[in-house]
Structure formats: structure tokens, C-alpha cells
Length: 192
Image (cartoon, rainbow, N blue to C red; front, side, top):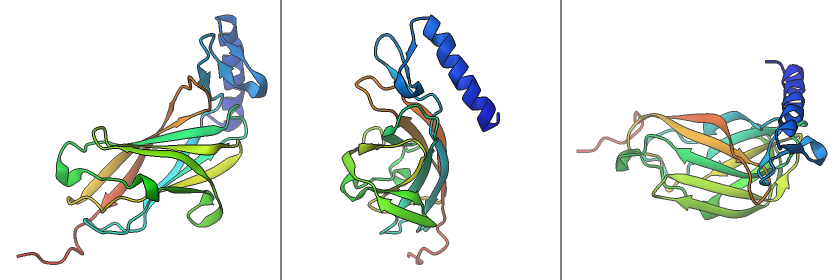
């Protein structure tokens, strides 16, 4: 669906839902009667990349680039990134939440740093949660940098589910898709 048609659909959907107990608030945001806030047009996962793709590499950074559309209706408050298929220890990626960072733009066109509030890594669920303080405004492209303690032990493609939340005490998360990172063991030193 093209962007113009998608925007019209979002506005029509917000208006129709308003008849069923939903009320669009200022800035086209959609808010349920119970206070749950939704994006009118959700952000979009643009890219996922890493600067070190060797297994077991240290000092790697995983980049997730997200575009917050002009017509999102709400700014971007929080992003949750969850590693999928991390059932075995050799596949698990352990993030260092204190080393997380974010900036305006992409890895090829880096802009100003963005302040982060709370950053939390839940080892049990393999989930990294980051809160922007203040929220990222509509019409902004943002890149999040996550630093693992080291890359996974086993080569292959790894999936990271990316979910975005608008501000609000009760905010509905929108799954943006999966960032795919490929790790290869070819450059690993020979071990006897």
C-alpha cells in the first residue's frame, strides 16, 4: 500500500474506531476509552546491521534504524528488541544496557545523539528495552546502537524482533518486523 493511501486508511480507521468508543486526540493519535495510545502510522524498521560479523567477536555494535513517519500521530517513546531462537547458550546474545546509545539519522549519515532514559536487558527473555527521554518526534529517522558482551558462538542468521511504543501510561506496542544479522565463523582462529 502506498504511503498516501496508507495515511488516508489510518485517518479513516481512526474515525471509524472513534464511533466504537475510540477518540482520536490532538495530532491524529488514536486513544481508546481505557487510555491505550496507538500510533496512527507506526514507525518502520529501515535496517539492521552490525560492524563485526564474526562469531565470538568482541566490541561489536548492532544497529537498528527506525523511521518515525510525519503522520505517526505520536512520537516514539520506547523500543523493545527481542532476540528470537535463543534457547541454547551458544546462540544467546547478552547485551550491555549501559553501553546502549541512539542518534538521529542512519549509520551512513549520523546526526545528533539522542538522550536515552531507562535501558534494561532481561536475560530470561533475551529482551532489550530502551526509553527515549524526550520521545523521538514524528518525521525523524533514529538509529539505536546495542553493544553485546560478544557475538554469538554459532554462525548463522539471527533474528531480532523490534517493537515500538508511543508515550503514555498505557501504550500499545507495534511490531515493526525483524532485524536480521548474519554471523560467520570463518575468521575464527583454529582451535585444537
